[in-house]
Length: 490
Image 1 (cartoon, rainbow, N blue to C red):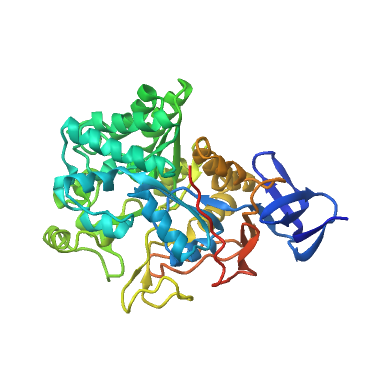
Image 2: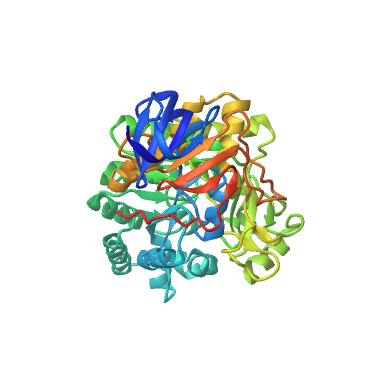
């Protein structure tokens, strides 16, 4: 009888690709799933998973929380692979190098960043592949947000092409932060992605309902690029960029899919977004387009919300990179949460967090210490997206079955990235030969615990989380020395 390094025994195994949903033993050797059996398996280490779900590890397509502290919070929410694809990083080699040197609990990967490459050219920045130092520090500078001549666009596209050669997982396009760039530039970037068979990941510019003067409707731009260039266009956090217009946006996506284009979507189960307060669309004179006021905005870690337009202008000028909650919808109002829910339950939508880098209100930040110090703050979606999805959409609202929710957290994101990244085809599945990235959770009790005031309370009910067959979370406790994460490259 074969003896495996590790056996998870008698758990409810859910494999979203084959449709398996049954009690099985899972045998792991050398970081790989070697057997999924209805018969008992023998292991050097055996872990009883009776009454628990054994699923593929959750794959987050959209996380900006890429340091060790952020990984640990996300591990306690069932995540095993964390990807920075919407903003991306530039140069991508620097971002990979930093993570490799420091070590990471979870698997990680990066798209190249159109926005930071654009900043590098138009602002003359020496960029180092770090979101806070590169993008957030310069988010409010208008020089990078303007239309550029063709020779400059060609230079930016050339920079992105070289980054793709360094293993970037696609191209992150934050066009919503530079909403006056010429649509032809967006098409040029999409055409580059199509030429190498990798996706783009777009934060769309404003919808025409929000800004009738926009150079192009944000949703139309995404679907048009898919049709005209043949690129796989991934529509990031469609809930927060569409808000109350989500049905029209999803209808467009559905239409172009039926015509043969590849457009994928993602959403998260919260009513508040978060970004740098200096973002173009948070200018006081533009807030009404989204049905907002200055009081809809609150700085992360500060008491209360911004009281008036003058205060907002002053903060935008003095500290444009400061993280701010943007309360778009009231998720405790069932009618408003329904907009979010429709985005989450749209055909083949992935669950993704839009996790935010941790900040420290006091003391020197130390992303390597655990537990987190009392000054650590973030958006609650960083710590709770997957627990919240399983609680609200499965257990409370019943709009997703448990296997379907697992599919949206695992196989769907693996397949979004996997078309051009063979390594992702071994993730998001519980099958022999696949990576032993596994999440084991209690389906009746798993839940988020983070709130807008207690933002780093980790989820509960995620009993074990394994990355490459090694425990990062065991018996609901994080193992601080566990650093099994590996780079995912194209």
